[in-house]
Image 1 (cartoon, protein in one colour):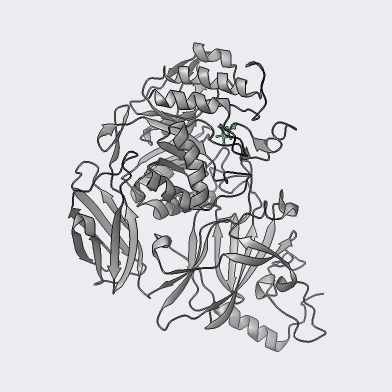
Image 2 (cartoon, helix red, strand yellow; image 1 turned 90 degrees about the vertical axis):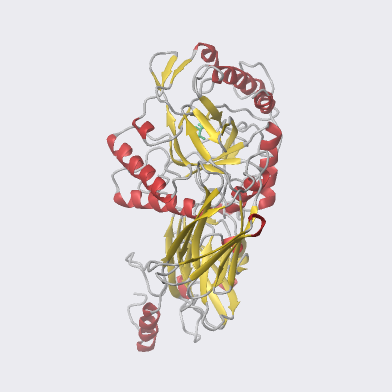
Length: 597
Ligand code: GCU
């Protein structure tokens, strides 16, 4: 059958290409501050339902896969694909909203892009992806460049040895099929948007460069900054200069044998807050190359049942948000779109956003920082995760690491969330306990939380009982009185949270079809949702230690689980704003309640 006869020349070509390959390398921080060239634009794509481009007919990986971007060399050659005659898609984007054939598609799509590159002598070339959902295999000029699993965190690879001076091509195999051992697992209440959904960049760096750094205000001493820097290699003796001109900070550290350095720096910055989202230009110099950032300085901590921002109690007037465009669905990936959705949050009176249930695009986090929104950022350890699978834990830990590595210098991010609505078990407790401990080992400047679930001690008495309480700084839980339980129960509800920690109600709410009006007892009317919010906000006022809430959810969002014709039509309708930007009556209930806070 096909490919059983290898020509000598082809075999030698194959052997040579396998010798050259690259791999994923640790995440480069502050990509917007680097020397980048975008690969956004038109890419060719091939929908490959049976992964013909990757496996032979015995399901063995084939050396003749689509990643070769091969062309017939003689009239009798058999090549059964051609990127250049295939459809085109403008990337970055999910594929579901770009090609109606792919609206529900879960499988492999191949993407190919030609690019011209002139690498400077002695420089390195990295290839960076803001996110690819869910699994990516990457080749450059037919040679393996990297492999990544996880749909919402960035990754990069060094392709210096794969690119040539002149014309190159990159091929990406994207597969968004769901599996029980994945993170998230195979069921989740959001659309499984597949594709290269965030920025694709070539990054020009020196052989030794600043891989990442953090510049954080001390939690207690607001005149002290903690500066840490890490090179991409264990090179000692490198002088790295930090300057913050407006604070008259100009310090140089020398890296140790492991390529890292740290320093405590005295400075008295204006503190970042929602009322004053003050950012400072920060410059990091190594060997004459400067990486610039805009960093805010604030302290976040808890005291008993209070959350303290810069030492003062704050009530988190929040809203939950999915990483979906303001209008019409699809993955978001721009400051402009972030500004539209944050504008709705601002109008509601919010100072806080829960970016559910996975790390959002970097434009959203940075726009929220510029506009003064505090952020809850979360990894998709959601519902029935494979708690005993070592690969699942490694995947969750890698996503947690990369979420923190990317946003460690974002002052507005105050909470790292490690889970949502996970069923209690010893295996789950062990998995999440390890994750919480790991998060603190990477960043002890922020709060740890997760969205828990209350257990009903009796029909109207709700007690929060979760072994994970000892691992988190803030105990948060979701409740749906009025939606999954009768709204008339709300006034009778009592809440028992037996932990001396701040409480966030990380979800509550109910659905409404925008424009559908009727009696408040009629499900799916705006009046039903409005009454639900009236009853819930009154009930929230009775929860001892409530430090914030993030109602579910800002905007209607696509979900394959929501199929009621004429009402849901594959949208989850719990939004306070419809998928076409109309504010529902319940929006104004939240707005009024926050005004009173
Ligand atoms: C859960 C879950 C959400 C989901 C919501 C709902 O609380 O955390 O992801 O969308 O319920 O039922 O709408």
